[in-house]
Length: 222
Image 1: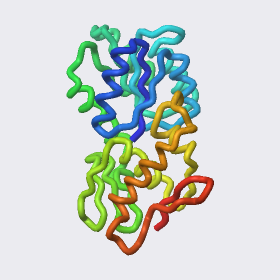
Image 2: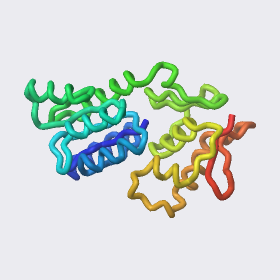
Image 3: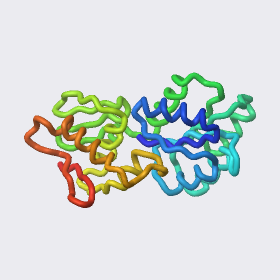
């Protein structure tokens, strides 16, 4: 699942991003509310985690603008303020949850899971193509009921391909989805990960699910 993290403190953003990626979420980052609004309006996210105190546009303003533009993505606000009035203001702005700093990372991930469970129906929690399946809540990948262990980047690529099964996904689109928008799109890193996925997903099976569309990208076909 894809998360947008809006945080102006570089060290805090790096810590949260790394931790969430280790939990197999893919994370885009924005350094201020204005940048976060642009990403929130143009890209599709499963969850937005935003600090409140930020330059250019604070987290409350960001939340209100997203809701004004009919963006219903769950929003978790982070702040050093922990008073009841501040929490009420945050929730009234359109946020779904509120977490005070400093916090234990385990609490953050628990709140992330809770918000994602609210968003997804049980049907939406499962992605599949033939006998290949991903449980989006448990982050478990199986083929023919046998669990497959993937790295975070492999998982992100496979999830995106499965969400768009039977559609051709370009290399550029995969890079934009798996990495943040600053990543060099000229690299062949996606091809490397696809080869690794093929070994784990298709090797030993008669039916191959991951296909290359020469000069364009990749597709999972049922």
